[in-house]
Each structure stands twice: as structure tokens, then as C-alpha cells.
Image (tube, rainbow, N blue to C red; front, side, top):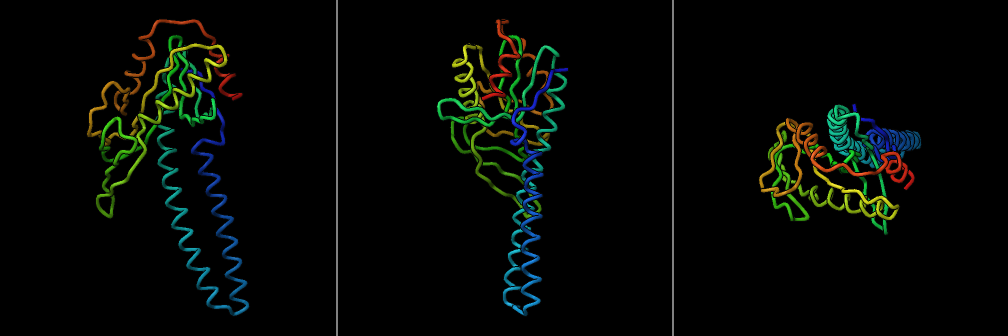
Length: 235
């Protein structure tokens, strides 16, 4: 079993969900108190306005929580697979790093004897359309209301930028290690409708085997995982 470490916990989807629920509860409580106060004062127009705000706020909070919940499920699915990796590896999750005014919020960093691997996790459903080099892609999914199209930032460009920031940070601290990267799409029914070229793409049914192969392919190099963990967590 791979050794696992938490990065900056405040950036985890689980923590964001908890914060959203707490903030939402506080906001809805304040609005309810204001509505009761207006009702006591017989300010019925104010009561109606506050009631509308409460309903709209609840809808927005529900939508945002749904997005975070999907992300959390993705984290869980990826976490189960990463735990099954070799004990020679260390995995750091939920990391924010900075280098030369560039910031990268990284889902997972895998430290293997021969390579450091940045793994971005996406819990997309439906299909992804566009081109591997386009900054923005189109996600098409089927919902209860019908087919929905949504523009999303290209995860292949996103993870490539994350790897560049990590590579720069490590070199600045005297560690010159190969940094590879890839994207893990955790949904079983998800498809990509374009050629991904040489990008490392992982799906639910092949992630562990394909990741194991990539992590073992490189020639072993000398670096201490503890030093990398210290640099990342103290950044």
C-alpha cells in the first residue's frame, strides 16, 4: 500500500463542502431571523422579498453543493486506487504550491523511485468534445431536463501547467527529478470524442494497471521522497 499524505487540508473538496454547508446554514438563519422580524413589524413586502432571497439562495447552495459532492466522489474513487499502489510510492493529495508567481492546486502527487507523477482527477459524465490543444472543451451530458452542454477548461492543459510549476519548485530547491502527468476520469460511462495524442489518460477500468506501468518504466534516480514531501508541504 502506498504511503499517503495530506497536503493543505483546506483545499480538499470534503473541507470545501463542510465550509459551504456551514456558511449556507448561517446565511439562511440570518435571512429567516430578518423575515420573522419583518413579519412582527408587519412589513409584509419585506417578508416577501426575504422569502424570495431565501429560496434563490437555497437553490444556488444546492447547485454548488452538488458540484462539490461530485468532486468528492471523484476524490474517493481515486483514493481507493492510489492506496493499492506499491508501498515504494508516496502519494500527497490536495496540494497548493507556488513558484515564480504561478499557483497550482494539485489533486495528487505520486512519488515513485523513478519519477514524480501529477495526477488530476475529473468526475465528468457524458462526453468531452473539442481538441487536446484547445484551452476550452465542451462537456455534453444527459440530465433529467435533457441534453446539457457545458464549457470546461481543458484538463490536459491544466495538469501540464501544474507539472511545470512543480518541476520549477523542485529544481529551485536542488531536486532535478522527471515530472510526468496525466488525467484520471473516474466515471465508468464517460467518453472522450477526440484524439488525446501522447497525453496520459486514465479511465476507471484501466487506471491502476496503466499507472503502475508508467511509474515502473523510468530508470531509477536518486532522490529522497521525504525531501520532496517537506518542500511541497512547506511551500
